[in-house]
Length: 98
Image (cartoon, rainbow, N blue to C red; front, top):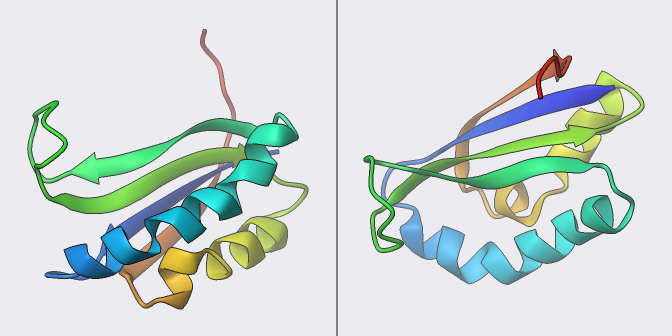
């Protein structure tokens, strides 16, 4: 089943995000390799394609067997382990389109 993992960063934690990003991307790579990742990326603080705009969270939609599996994966994300997130929400998702 697909799950949405929506994470909100703690304020003023941009340095934590930047320092932990390589490990975070390595944590996501197996989902890519297994064809389980639908989409992932940062949530900018304003509508802008400029990568220097501060980020306020992350969104991941990926396939997991159970909610517990998604929660365990999210809890072991290097961003989570580094204390970046103020809140993490995990919800089931059914893709309808396209």
